[in-house]
Length: 81
Image (cartoon, rainbow, N blue to C red; front, top):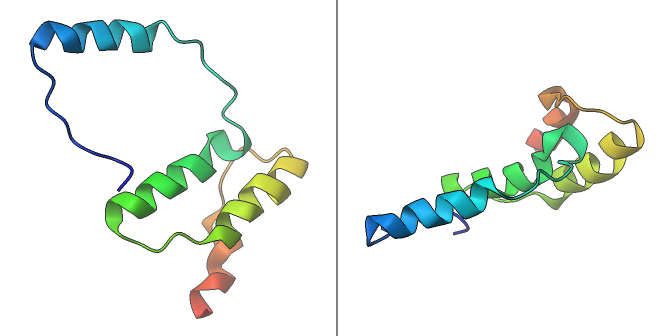
């Protein structure tokens, strides 16, 4: 699984990590605001199969059309596979 729950001890270490995270610059999220990365994480978290064709559509078609909103109907044809 990509997402793991961890306990950080001592607690001041968590504050240091949060400060480091907050100091990072925001990168361009890409098509749909980073949907392909979020899609992979959600599939992993929920135990769903990751579909490369969904990721490819977002990274290729959405990018060329400069689409920033995800339309789930774009992938309804995959339900039958």
